Amino acid sequence: MARVYAQGRLQQAIDRNSAADVRIRAHIHSFPFLWHLMFGEKVESVDASADVLQEGPLTVHDAALTLKGVKIDRSQLLAHRRLVLKDISQVNAAASVTADDLSHTLGVPVQIAAGTVEVTVAGQRVKADVAVSNGVVTIKAAGVQLPSLDLPASSLLPCRPDATVLADHIRLSCTAHGVPAQLRDLVNGVTAAGP
Image (cartoon, rainbow, N blue to C red; front, top):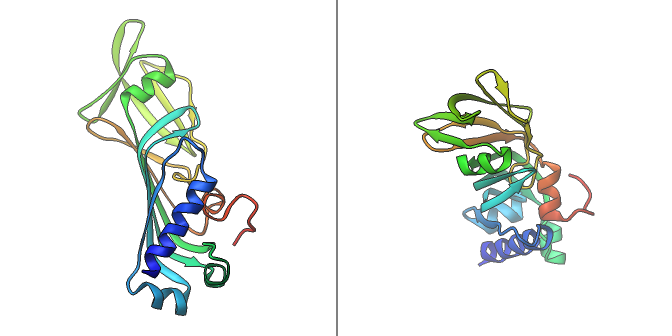
């Protein structure tokens, strides 16, 4: 019952602090919940996900965030019914980018199939190389670099992601430690003090 209450508070905080057009779902994993919360101010893990997010100029799909070793301010939860993140041991984030997303953003036809990316340039379909460095996606095809896409850190991708080309999409993923500012603002509110 207490876990469901805390999870409801977390969901309310996320809904209150996220953009109106974004639907993020959250779930707290911890058993026994009250024991961990009362004596360690920790929960084992928290998952958050969204079907579609706008990350800078790019639309991403199936965004998922897993928080491990989440430390919650017990006094805020009990006295003020407010869920406040104090610390996180590890944050794992991932999202997918489709060929349609890239085509729309870059303004050129992009295909992703069998783990390769192809771009149509000057009427010719050519294999492209995709790289992500420090959160900037670059695509090069036939020696031509297409416009770079900056992926700003956001609440569900709170760290600069790496990219892996899979069978039919590009998987963005990253790992961080501590409480990233975007995530703190999403849960605690923008005016809340840092950890």
